[in-house]
Image (cartoon, rainbow, N blue to C red; front, side, top):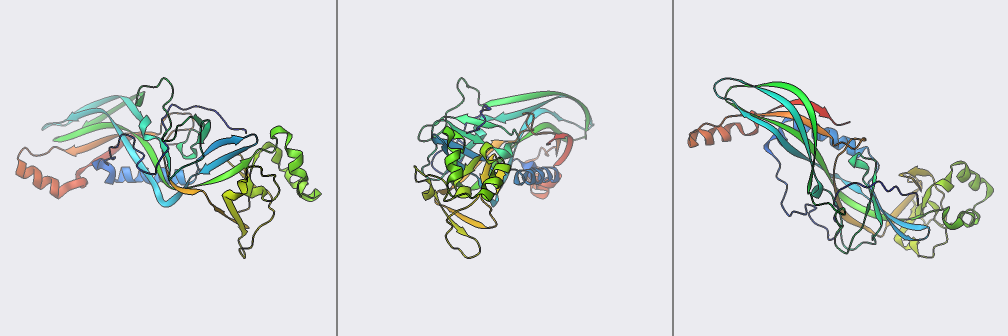
Length: 347
C-alpha cells in the first residue's frame, strides 16, 4: 500500500463528534491573544495550514483495498491555540530591571492531539494517519477500540518539553511585570471527512486485469507514462474500470459537472498525497460517508522540532487599591499588554 510508518508519540481520539480536549477542560485564551504580535502569528500559521495537502487517515480493508478519510476544513474552521510556557518572570519596582534570558522551553501537550468523526467509522486496528498541516510530513500508525485511540505503548507523560539555550538581555520598564514565554502552537480543524475507497494496482499482480478492463492503447500509454503502477488509485479516478468485490462504488456517486449525467468510466488525472485522483474540473463526486469531523495536532517544523516563538509579555503592575485596580483594568483591558518577539521559528 506504500503507507509510511513513521511513528510520533501522540495520543489520538476517535469517537462521537464532540470536543477534542480529552481533559474536558475548555481552552481559555490568554489575554495576549488580542495583541498585534499574537494576531499576526496566528494569521501566518493559518495561511500555512491552508496551503498544505489535506490531512487523512488510511485504514486497510483487505488485500489491495483500503479506505481514506480526508479532512476538508470549513472556511472558518481553522483555529490556532497558543500554548505558552513561562521561562521566567520579573516584576520591576520604581526602577527598570535587566533580565538575562538563557533558556527557551517549548511545551508540547500530547492530549492536544486528536481526530473525531461524527457517528461510526470503518477505521480499525492498523490505521495510519497523515497530518499534512502538522509540519512533520510523517504518518502515524495507530490502534483503536470502539471509542478512542490508545496512547503510545509505555508512554506515561502527558507533556513533552523541548529546551534550547538562548542568549538575550531585556530591560523591563519600571512598575511592570515582564513574563518571558515560549509559545508553541496547536492547530484545530473543523469540517467534513469524506471517505474514499483506494486500490493498489500492483497488489497481488492485479495490474494486468486493471489495464485490460476497458482501456484502449492510447489510454494505457497515458497511464504507463504517468507511472500509475507505482501509485495507489482512488475508485473515483478509475470508476467503471475496477473489479469491485467489496461493492466500494457504493461509497460515492460520480457525475459530469457540466450536465450532471452519470459517469460510466473515468481515468486517473492527477497525483496528490501518493494517490491518483479524478479530474475535479470534469467530475463531481458526492461521498456517501462524509461526516462532520475535528482534527487537532501540535505544529512542527520539517525536522521534527516544534514551531516556536520566544516573547516578552509586559503588563503594567496593578495598583494596590481595589478601587484603583478595578478602574485601571476596565480602562486599559488588553491595550496595556505589550509583546516583544525575541525569536520566532515558524518555517
